[in-house]
Image (cartoon, rainbow, N blue to C red; front, top):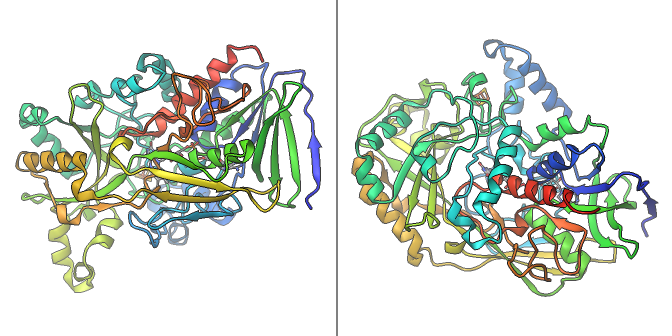
Amino acid sequence: VPKLAVSTYCLVMPDAIVIGSGPAAAAVTLALAARAEVHVTILDVGLCLESRRSEAVEQLSRTEPGSWGQADLDLITEQPAHTSITGLPEKRSFGSDFPFRDVGQLLGVEAGPNTNRSVVSGAYGGFSNVWGSQVMPFTNATFDEWPVSGAEMESHYQAILREIPFSAEADDLAELFPLLSPSLVLPRASERTDYTLERYKTHRSDLQRLGIRIGKARLAFNGPSCVRCGMCMTGCPLGLIYSAAQTFDRLRSASNVSYHPGLLVLKVFEDRDGSVVVTARDLTDGTVQSFRGDRAFIAAGAVGSTRIVANSLHLFDRDIGMGESVQFVLPFVSRRPTSDPRTDPNFTLNQFNLAISLDEVNRDISLLHFYTYNQAFTDGLPALFRNPHADVLLSHALRRISVALGYLPSWASPGIHLRFSPGRDSMSQPETLVSRDKTDWLHNPMLRQVLLRLLKSASRLDLYPVVPKLLFAAGGKSYHFGGSFPHSHSGASLKTSDRLGRVGPWTRVHMVDAAVFPDVAATTFTLTIMANAHRIAQGVLGMEW
Ligand SMILES: Cc1cc2nc3c(=O)[nH]c(=O)nc-3n(C[C@H](O)[C@H](O)[C@H](O)COP(=O)(O)OP(=O)(O)OC[C@H]3O[C@@H](n4cnc5c(N)ncnc54)[C@H](O)[C@@H]3O)c2cc1C
Ligand code: SF4
């Protein structure tokens, strides 16, 4: 039986407890810690990169790329690992699986057929250690279904864009997704990207009639400092790609912020005296500790937070639905070859985006992110191309291939389902089943429209989609999921949250990550998580504590 240690904080300053250190938690802490009178306690699983790998990164960051040692490079450039479910292989961060590793946060989680089990990160910085760093706001029309307007979100998007490094360009995408903030310059794009953007310019009005707009990537990275070493997919040795850990590294030095790693939060409740109590298991010795504060902000990732709430409010043996913006991988071939991309050192994050808008108001949008060459291109080709004697053949292929990662919005994607049942004892996490609706991709009306428009635009862009190679990722593998307790016009219930993320009977506990999204647009996701979390925190700061 675990020991119950109660640590009661002195309530002289308003005391906020934040659960997690991913992007949602970073945005909440950013808003709360700016007020010197608020004390912020962060409780986090907080797994970090192994020291030998962080020492190698440190060593590389101190030296010029030309003198980077091979042993250090080998250690931190491990390629993504194949998994048994469909979709992209699982990314690594500087050779490590720590963003996905189970240190207890996945105990009792089971996944249904072709569904991702690794849906809760236990990392310091959460999944932003491995994200593609693509940042665009949702279109204004997306918020029509929310009890929060696009206009209300604007200042919060700006607050986040001031916090992160933001590289972008004002182009046609800004008609749908305004830049909202000054930006840094993107590095030079690949030859293939320049060629496609040129073709888009030439056929712009025809393509726009098809609802197609193309523009450069919008990235949370420091473009001007990029040395084009091509290691973005395995981790930037210069730390140029934003992770929420960077915000916490800075905020943790503030006198009103205290960070506690190694704690797995199990439950939250509101006490009769008006305080909130958060119960967590210490992952080093198994003891259970309680933390008391005035308000709690749950930011454990959409599934992690839903699990904590279901355990706290006894929401067992019922279906809790979530939306996912499903991910697909689609290769394209071009008639005109460009240079062998292996000879053109480049940054390997997303290079340009193609948005297909299927309605008048720009809500029904599918977004495709195009990538320049990285090792995964070669790995994804048939074995024949990887034969050392077939390099000429490989070169011919690589000079013509582009690969896009596309998304459909949650309202055109199969739903995710969570089912919880009580854990072993009152101090355990609940048993959890994650599954996805069955789907018939062939008859998905939005997908058919998207493919049709890509085929119609193919000759103008010289980008021919290889439709038979279209691959849909497993359930939960897009990592763009949420909406278990969507913000609702009618306020809080056991199925919905109010505008401040409060669920059921709670008045001082706030869910702040994508668990509260009414739906998940197919455009990039995490900037809106951060902006919405920031909005909630600012809303709470304006209330009586
Ligand atoms: C490979 C990959 C690429 C991606 N690319 C993009 C992209 O380009 N653009 C984009 O918008 N999004 C992208 N995403 C999605 C993005 O990373 C997530 O949307 C984002 O990280 C979610 O932030 P979060 O704070 O809600 O949760 P997470 O990032 O999941 O963070 C959860 C935090 O909670 C903590 N935690 C979990 N459970 C507990 C518990 N019980 N007790 C205490 N602490 C707990 C963890 O330690 C962690 O710090 C990508 C994701 C992946 C995996
Ligand atoms: S190419 Fe990628 S990994 Fe290399 S410096 Fe630029 S951002 Fe960092």
